[in-house]
Length: 122
Image (cartoon, rainbow, N blue to C red; front, side, top):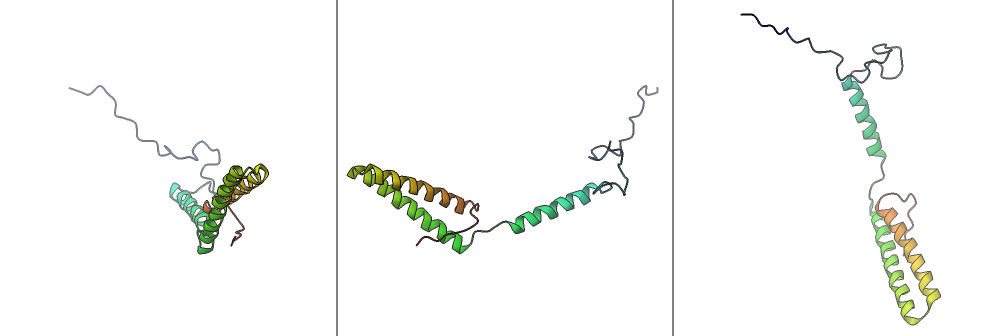
């Protein structure tokens, strides 16, 4: 008895290759990375990620001190603004709460490593 089903076709060597379909695929003289293997492309992406990681600002002691001091300023001004409302001084309350909001926003930027220049408020 013979098998009526033909054998499966061989696997496509270009399956999963992101450059397949590019008319310049495999041309070493065309573009950056046109003839690179997936391993070489992954290595380059790893190198770029490493450079981004190494150039990212880190949490330093000075940054921590700035963050703590601006958090204290924000809390003191917020409490002072609420106290001004209790004392009946609406203008002082608004001023304290606005400055507290700005100090809190700057403190948030310090802790998320978005602040470029650090001001120590002591």
